[in-house]
Structures are given as structure tokens and as C-alpha cells.
Image (cartoon, rainbow, N blue to C red; front, side):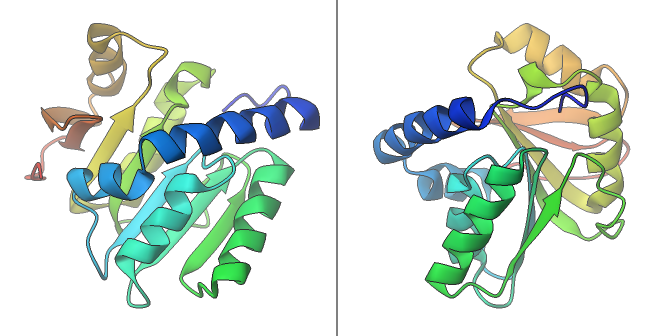
Length: 184
């Protein structure tokens, strides 16, 4: 995510309204189920925004699972925290910023990079962090309507951290390079 600045609070609130409409038209739970999110998993939602995917993941992974919601915007973190508290979720952890150093290595089953790849100033750093956090058989699920398929695939696989393993209706799936991640 852009370290130089984050979007204004007004822009974040407008984006949140747009995402609520998007989530109503394409429920995040369905997309996450297609991506392979299951009970008991650990999910990392990088660039979580207002939390549509983070909260849907928290429901899907249940009390035995865990969701890390990561974002550089303070309102995103506040939004996810409030919504998780309102829902009674104890399986959701917010991470402010774009540094995932506090997330343990090799603990994440599925990393989500949804509608944020186009905004990254240094995607290789983010991909390196995601690679570090994923389990050996972990999967990175990516979707970004701002990018065409070829540039998106190139951005994810170009640094050698991930290899393409397939796609669903809404996402592209990647395994850690040199490991045996599976597509769902």
C-alpha cells in the first residue's frame, strides 16, 4: 500500500459505500468459499478496507480460525474492529500499516489480495511479506478489476514468490513458489 499517504477520510467513506454495494451484488462469502476458505483456517486480508472480506472470512473460519485484517487507513482498522465487536467475533485481529512483521511466519492458510494490487507502490515487498506468512501449502488469492489478467499474473509470479495454480470465477490462485499449494 502507498506509504507516502493514504486516501482522505472522505474518500475512504465513499469507497466504503461503493464496497457495500459490491458486497451486496457479489457476496464476499461466496468468493471466499470459491477460493477455499474453510472452518479452522487462518486468513490474512491485506488491504482489508472496511472489512467486507475480513468479516465474511471470520464467519467462515469460525471460532477455531483466525483472520488478520491489514490496512494503512485508520478508518479501515476502526471499521473492522467495530464490526467484529458488534458481531461478537473473537477470531479477528487488525494490523495497522502495511508491515506484516507481527504476523507469524508460516501460519496463514490463505492470503487475500483483493482490489489492492494496483495501488501498491512496491508490490514485491508486499508479496515477500505474504510469502513469509503463508504456510508451505498456503494459497494467495488475488483479484483486482483495475488490472488485466496478463499484467496481474506477471506481477504476482514475476518475483519468484508465487506460481499460478488456477482461477475461480472471481479470483486467481497462487501457491508459494517451490511448494505444493492446491487450488480449490
